[in-house]
Length: 417
Image 1 (cartoon, rainbow, N blue to C red):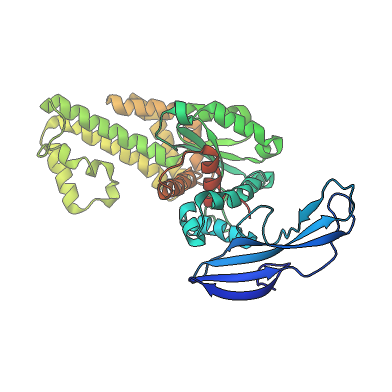
Image 2: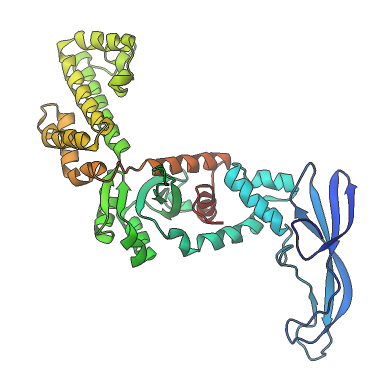
C-alpha cells in the first residue's frame, strides 16, 4: 500500500531523469458494470500518469488502470475504466493528496498557483482544475456562516482595469469578528460581493436568511451611509459601531486640511521645504504621547512663527482629544469624552473641525456604541484586507472574479476544511 493513498499498492519504485516514479495498481477483484450490474470481463490495463506531492524531487505516480467490458451484449455501457476516488478524481491528473497539499500551500505558505505548478511539473490550468472544485464546494457550505455574532464590513479595489471589461472595481467584503476565549479577535472573511453600496451589503444579508441575521448582535462599519442603511434595514436587533480607526483618521484629515488652508492663506502657495507648517506635517499626524522632545520643540517653533498658526494648533488639539476617547483606560471615561466631542465640535469656529463635529453628531449613536460593545471595531476587517492585498500582489493581479473570490476566501480563513 502506498502511504496516504488508499486502495492501491506499489508495484515498482524507480528514479528516471531525476523524477521519482512510483508504479501502482489495485488488487484484483470482481467488477460489476456500473450501468447494469453484470460482472464485467477484464480487457487489460492502461498507464495513467499522475502528479503527486513533491519531496526532494518531483514524484510521478504511474497507475496501471484496469479496463473492463460488460459481458451483457445488450448493455449500452460497453467498455469502462476502473475508478479509485481516494487516488484521483475521474479524468484528473493530480492525485487527491496532491490536491490537499496544494490547498494547504495556498492557504498557509503564501504560495501561488504558478509556483505549485512548477513544483508539480505541470501547468497553471491543470493545478487550478484540481483545486477549484474543492474550493467551490467549501464555499457553498452554508455552515461556515453559523455562529457569527459580531460582523464587520469593508471594501477594497480588486482590479484597475476598465469596468466595462472586468466588471465593478470595488468589492464589498463581510468579515466574522468573533473573539476567542482570551478576548482576541480571530477575523475571517465570509464573502466578497461586487460593488460598494448599501444594496450589495443588504442583498448579501438577505441571502443569508433569518437565522443568520437574528444571530448578529454587533455590526462594525466604516463611516459610509450605504452600509449603515443596510444594517438598519436588515439587522434591526444589531448595534451598529463606527470603526475607531476611521474616526481618528477623520480627525487627522481635518487637521491636515486646516494646515493646508492656513499655509495657502499666509504664503499663497502649497507647502515647500523651509515653510514652518510644511516641516511639521508628519508631526501633526502623530499622537501627542509619542512625540519626542525634539519633535515638540519643532511643533512649538512652527506654531509660534505666525499667530495665524494657532488655528492649526487648536485643530491638532481637537484631534488629540478625539484620540484620547479611544485611549481612555476605562470605557465610561472614554464615553464621557466622546459625548463631549459630539456635543461641542460642531460649534467650533474652525470650519474643518465644525464639519467633523457635524459628522460625528450625525453618527452619534454608532460613534458612542464603541464604548458599550467592549471596544468593538473594524480592525479585523482591515487585517483581512491586508491579507487580500498581499495575495493579490503575489499573484500579480487577477482577471477572473470567481477565482479571486475563492482564493481570498481560502487564504483569509473563510473556508472550513
